[in-house]
Amino acid sequence: MFSVQLLNPAQTLPFILCQNRDQEAIPSNADPCGFSYPDCVYTKGKDLLSQSAERTRRLGVDKSCTVFIDGKQECIRDNDQWINCPDGGEVGDFVKRIELASKKSVYATWKREKTARD
Image 1 (cartoon, rainbow, N blue to C red):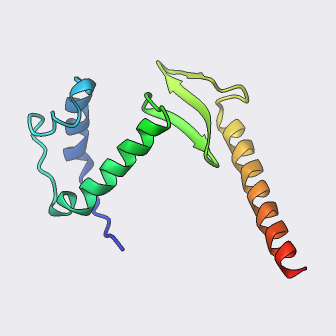
Image 2: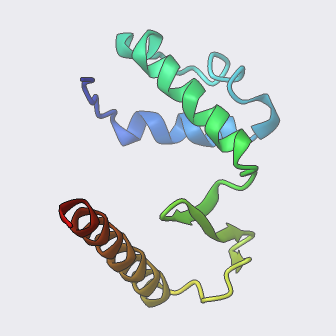
């Protein structure tokens, strides 16, 4: 179990903007950007961040807005445009894909349970 600590956006937004000025330097530019980490970051937080960064690297994600639905890369938002998004990038398009993925998941679960009972 881990605890969630919400940070004040008035403090975190300037930090994020500072880091984004030199994205290649992330995470080593955290100290120069003047961010003070809460105590929880030094244990579980660092581990979670490392795991997230490693998973992102393994998936080949190099854009900050890469959308995955049910484990499949669906769309990438880059330079204010959706790319590699053949089914559309509007809210309704995402809703349809999420609903379809959910229905497939529910059906797969039902089928597994039915097979186990038979």
